[in-house]
Structures are given as C-alpha cells and as structure tokens.
Image (cartoon, rainbow, N blue to C red):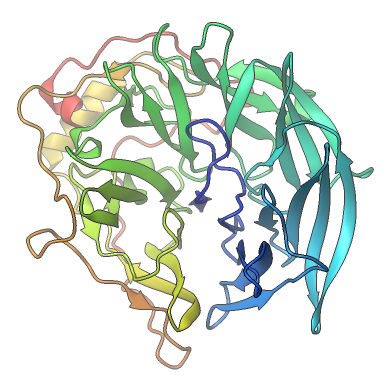
Length: 439
C-alpha cells in the first residue's frame, strides 16, 4: 500500500514519518505522539492495526518528548524515534516491555536538520534526509551494520521521499536547483546514490511526485505544466503521457492524495486512490480511479486522523480515528471496482496512448484539460453527493469479507518491468483529441 502521513517534511509532496501519525508500509502498525498526562510535552504511542481489533500501547520514556521529535513504526512492531538534543539528532528503537518501555540506541547524526523518510516497503530499514550547504544527504539510520551512515549525496535542496520499488532501492526525491526549479529525481541506493531524472514534464515547470505504487506503477504527481498547479497521473514504464484530468481539479476545494490500493499488478487504471478533501465546509475523503472520470465522496469517521489511511488489496479503505471515548479506532469501507468502459471508448483510449512518445521510465508530456465548464464537486458532505458512510472495524465474530471485485482489466497493460536506469522524456506531443484530454 502507499501511505501518506499527516505532517509533511519541508517541501510540498513530502511524506516523511511525522510527529503526528505514521503507518508502517505493510499496514501492520502505526505510531504517533500524544500529549503527556501532565500536559507538558508528548509521549509516543503505538497502534496495532493488523489484529482482530486495533489497540494502542503507550511507550512513555523517562521524560516527555520535546518539539521536533519524530516517530515511525517498523513492521516488526518497534517504533523508530528521532530526538533533537542541542546540535545532534539521537535515534533509537522503542518497544513495550511489560509496564515500561525498552529503548535500543542506534546512534546520533550531527546535522542541523534531519527528518525521517517514509518506511521502506519491506519495513526492515529506515532512512532519513538531511539538507546541507552543497546538497542533500540520504542517511541509513536503521538496518545497516554500523549505525547511522550516509548512503547518498544529492546536489540541490531535496524534499519529499517516495519509494518506487519494494526492495527499498529506488528513492524518488523532489530536487530544487539553484534557479528555484523543482523536478523529481530517482536515487539508486544500490549504485552508490546514482541520480537519474524522473519527472521533466516541461523545461520550466515544477514537477513533484506525491505517491507511487510499486505493484501497478501508478504515479500521482503535482505540476504547474498545464498553466497552474494540478494533480496528474502517469505510469512507470508507460508510453502514455502524464494526464491532468478534470476530476482532480474540483473548484473550491483542495485535494491531497494519501493512499493507493496495492496489489493491482499490470492494472494501474484499476487502482483506487484515496484523497483528503479540504473545503470551506470541512474535511472529508474522496476516492478516484484513473479509469473513472469523477470522484466518489465519502463521509470521514468522527475523529479521523486527517490525511492518513490504507488500502487492502481487495479494495477496502481503512481510516484511523481517535477522540471522545475512542482512543484507537479503525473505520473501513469496501468499494467495488469501477465499471468497465464501453468497448469503443476503451479502443479509442488505447489507440491514443499507443501513439505517444517512448520513455524507459515514465512518459512526461502534458495532457491539456478539455475546454468548457469544469464539473463541480460538492463543497462538503451533502445528501446529493454519492457519499458512503464508514463503519467501525467489527469484532472477529461480526466481520464479513467484502464482496469480491470482478476482474476487469482497464487500459493497456504495462509491458515491461521497472528498469533501474530511468530515462525520462523531456517533452512529448500534447493530447490530440477529446477522448484523451478527458481521461
């Protein structure tokens, strides 16, 4: 699954582990910092999400955590914590030991700034990012033989952090150069930090990668190449251009993707994407499929930890929540896959995409939106919008599996596995007809 945490590291599109809430890459655990009992400082807390019921375990230390502390859960149940004391960043692993908390010291990093990157998909290691005077350093802070160590140096000021594969080898970063232009690059950690460009939609556009799913190759990007900052999508290894559909530009609200459905190999257009929606009437959830041309709006559970959640492979969206009498809750909703397109429309789209330019990693042209009025999205939950309520995660005796989704491959398959030496496309022809512009 692809996950986004609440508080991003500096820079748009950053998905670092955060001081608010973070979920392990496999969805087994989560961690957050909660106010201490005396109201001074905060205390780490671990959530278990893969059992019959979610539950929370406090991990208090000898003293409350100060500002700037980060936590990130590992797939083995331990919680990585970063504390800044004076000019050093102290890293340790926390784990419950009966009534107390065990702590394994990993080492320190002497840098002015350091923040944790999202957990690697396999969850066995952890990395951090540190900007410096000449560039940005990628640190391996857990999983190495000798404690924290630098594993890559990237020129420019980097933010973000998205894993492109399940092995934790390819790391995408949003790099800002001396001119102030931001492009996404790929750092190959097994080739000594070799850097290759990933997103170069146009020469003068700011292109950032927000989410990536290693199974399907689906990418969610934000770029101002269409003339304003827009959400778009592309596919790793595809010949088709990056697209900016009208469905991802509803007026009056802001969309932020935070999770992509995993396990949809060779079917990126069938992947469900969960988005946080912020509007004048509040915050709620929307779901979008690349194969569909509209959003489906969902009522968020009370106390939702905003901007967090996870998908199961069979299309169940789970959202963590807390508040009131509930210290740790997980709401869920099963969503069926979108209806397949009519054969004529599918054939038109396949024909359009086949004529695009070739890229070994991702096609990076701009698909302009179709002219005319933009479909309006609701400013908040209303009875006229296609909302679906969330229900709490039931106890084992009440749990029923979601109805199986029908198999319906949509769009052209990804014909090649993910290569390790991406060669991006500088510019490609624009979309040439209405069918491609609207998708």
